[in-house]
Length: 456
Ligand code: F0G
Image 1 (cartoon, protein in one colour):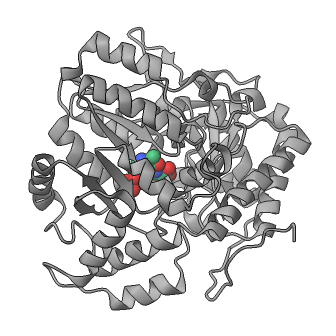
Image 2: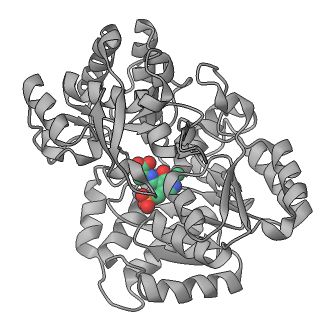
C-alpha cells in the first residue's frame, strides 16, 4: 500500500478547545504578541515544540507504574543505563532532569573565559550555557545549510575546512569541545551525514580536541542516514546509531525529544576523570548519580522510549508526515527550508514576508498571523531568538528568519496536519496585510521566551 498510516492506535484522548478569530486576536494582544505567553488551552494545534510533548506508549505508562523510586541504586536506573549504553556504547552515563541541565554541568566544567566551543549550529540553550560560563560558541555550518531553498541531503553538516582553520587560528588548547547537533534543530532540523561526523572526528583526533554529540534527535538523524547515505540502506537504525556514537567522546541528550519522555536527559562519556567531575556537580545541582533530578518512573519511561524510537515503522511515519506538509506547501508556493527536516517544518519568513525587514521581526509577525488565522502556535527562530545588538545599539540580525512548526511525536493525526497546511496557505494568500513588530520589553539572555512586542 502507498499510504503510510500512523503506526499506533489511540487509547486515551485529550480535548482540543476551539476559539474564534476575534478571541484569538484578543488573546495574542494579551500575550504581548509572544506565543510563549499564550495559555496552552487557547491553542488549537500546538507546534511550539516537539520537546516533552510526545505521547507515551502503553508500554511506557506501564513502566511508569513499575518505576523504582529508591534514592540510590534503583532498578529503573540500571534499566535506563543499559538502554543508553546499548545505543551510545559509552561507559559513564549520568541522568539529568533535561538536556540543558546536562549542558550546564558539561560547560561549567569545560567552559570559561577565552574558550571556544565549535558546532554545526548550537541550540539556543546550549549557546546560552556556553556563554554563561564565559566561553564563546561558534557555528560553522556547511554552505548548503545556509540556503533555505536548496535541496541537499545533509544540510546539517559541519564545514570541516572552516573547523580546521578555526582550530589552527585559536589553538586547540582553547577549544574544549567540538559539538555536532543531530539533527540540526536551529538550522532546519537538517541531518548530518556519517561521512561528516567521521571527517570531524579525524580533525578532532589530529588536534587532540574532544568531540561531543548533542543527541536530542539522533534516531531521526540515523533514519536520514539510512535513507540518503550510500552503504547504510540495509543497516538497522540501532547499528547506525551505534556507529554514530562510536565517533564521539561523549554526548548530551534531551530525552524530551527522541526518547518520547515528558521530562529527562543525560550526559554520557568515555572519560572517567570528566565523568567524576560531572557527577560532583550533578550531586550539587541535580541529585544522586542514579537519579539525577528524575523520578525512577521517568528513568523507566526513557529506557523504554529509547527502544521504541528505533523502530523503523515509527521513523518512516514520522519523517513522512513532515514531508507531507512540505508537499502541500510546495503546491501553494510557500517558502520553507528544503527539504523538510526530521521534526519540524521551518517557514522562511524572510521570503514569506519580504516587505518586513529583519529589525521588524518577520518571523515573529508570521507566528502571530498563524495563531490568529487558525490557532496554530509555532516559534520564531530568527532575529528575536538569535539577534544581537551591535556597539551602536542597532540590531545585528540572525542569518535566517524562520518560523518553526515542530510536530510533537505520535500526537496529531493526518487531519490535524491537513488543517495546519490549510492555515499556512491561507496566511500566505493574505501575506501582504501582515505587519512587522517592535520589541517593548526584553531580557539579556534567551529574550525570546519572555519578550513583549507591539504590532507596527
Ligand atoms: N539541544 C537541542 C538541539 C535542543 O533542541 C534542545 C531543546 C536542547 C538541547 C535542550 O534540551 O529542552 O531538554 O533542556 N530543544 C527544545 C526545542 C526546547 O523546542 O527545540 P532541554
